[in-house]
Length: 454
Image 1: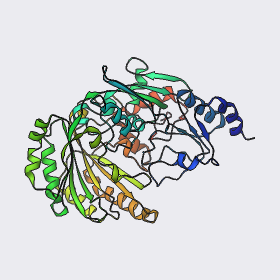
Image 2 (image 1 turned 135 degrees about the vertical axis):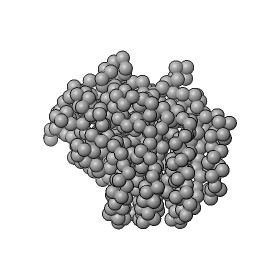
Image 3 (image 1 turned 90 degrees about the horizontal axis):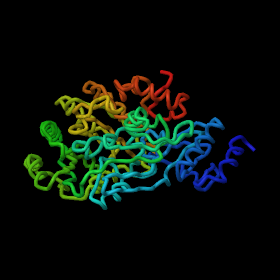
Image 4 (image 1 turned 120 degrees about the vertical axis):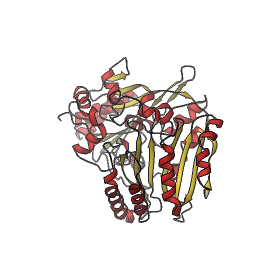
């Protein structure tokens, strides 16, 4: 009997979830994450049903010397949720969601996705800033900061986070909030998975049922005008309006290239009509899918572009503005992209998300501007080399316009201290101090890692 088997024999009788070995019929499904490019084989998968299971899984991993990874929704493009040869703590079946309508709060377990959370909160006409692709898990998205459709009006998701039930490297179960372990709670709001396993998270909710959302698409030969209009218009955009600009392909598989404005206005119908009047007057779109829809619908309108199992490789960085030179570069790069699922996406970063002091949470970027994202996606493994090469080359072509700052959850294979410091900025040293207190041995290192020895 191996050391792993010996320790499993101790844990298994009381483990309420499942300890899944490589010879288990459930193994391949359990180890798979959203990005089909990731193909790692853990030695053991601990599919947890609650905090006690997480405690046991951490203890088992530490006593056997196994590396730990943590899977919430499994959506992270870098595949850090899966360890090669270690123990994966799997929260996929931890789906509890508890809405408190009078208090306007919700607590949800670490395996919940945004589609699931939005469905429950929408029953009460409530919402919080969430993922722009609804299949994203709430835990990793939140710990990374949480950029979404409501950030202009209500801030990032971490600005609405009230508490986290966290299991530490020592197996302690802590309730982190502004009143309990405030240093840890500060770090959890943007510091990623560096400090433990988020068993559940509690959010502040806001009254919101329907929004004005959808997209307007234009022919690619109008793309330069669309992007310049987008730049000028968003400089004065109200908090209620979050608008992204994208160079995309038509979803019918034809490969037709388009320029699109993707829109969510969280104000009243009258305010939305007034605020979007210049967009309507700009020019006639080829495709008009803009209207009054439930918030969960706008939060899922991009899902089809990122199907589970598709191969993906992303890169991104922040921009202060959209210069004519950058717009020209974007069009030049997009015309050479090798996959009809690839896009160039410009995400507006403004409003309430930018009015929070830099040191109030671990999220370092609080400056108005844009995030440029290259969310490359393809289906045939034989196309992997070409798509990764295109993404890297396009990213390099945009570097003259990048400013300081990176978005943690968009990292693919970025490595090194410079990239990590670009994410955390002036908050990095304080994060190192918190890491030393709660995970001095760097047990949780499969992330954009904060090295406690730095």
